[in-house]
Length: 283
Image (cartoon, rainbow, N blue to C red; front, top):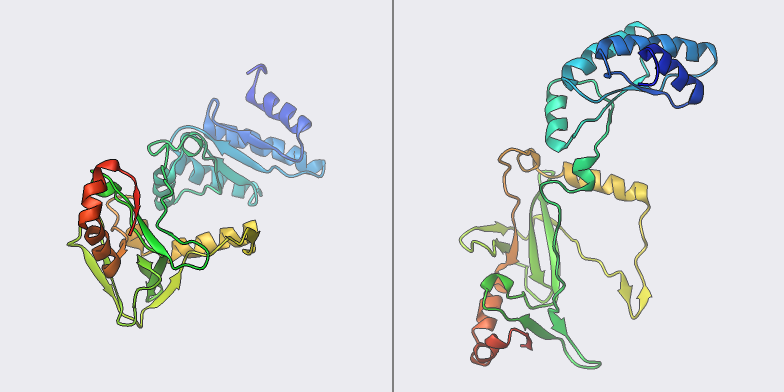
């Protein structure tokens, strides 16, 4: 804004950062701003540099990106990226893609770093089993007056099932459970919701030890490997689960015998007597 014209501002920017020019084109008239960026882009080429991109930060991002792409391509700047910002989130991005927006780079800021509508995810570790050297495992249970807060005892593992290329459910189970005849997943919040997995269903156990005996035994994957795995895992979710509006609920719950163990354990007489203490007890 310290320059008399937008073109002069772009010229000064290009002089200062010839190898990293992304012009914000919507200060006055967005499409005219794109044309000004093209002018400066030609001067950059004459000096052996390339215009990296233009940025849209207001207005109808779908329409403006499509029209901006036409202007850039017609002027020979097919590789110049269109960057978009302005309070973007996953729903806006999905909508823009559905509208055919030609945006190559998404500037997600406020709604990412603040968490926006889900600003915190709480997690609590609870002991589920304990053993002394040379002895067998003993299961533990955290008691509460609220059923939801009663912990799940056992030596626990999580098994993820896959069928026809898609994940079909996750079961929390005790490693001593017999799953040879299959696995029935029970929703802990609604026990009437159940899903049976055949023993022939493809599955993978998710929990891996990181430390054992005080020593690290897990090989930390590279960032690129973690990124690829994340993409693969997301792609394996059914599209109905991935959608933002009224998505299907992915089945996650307790394996049947573990589901039955939890209330049975909490109803044992000696545990009922101690429930008011709200502590972990050995089973």
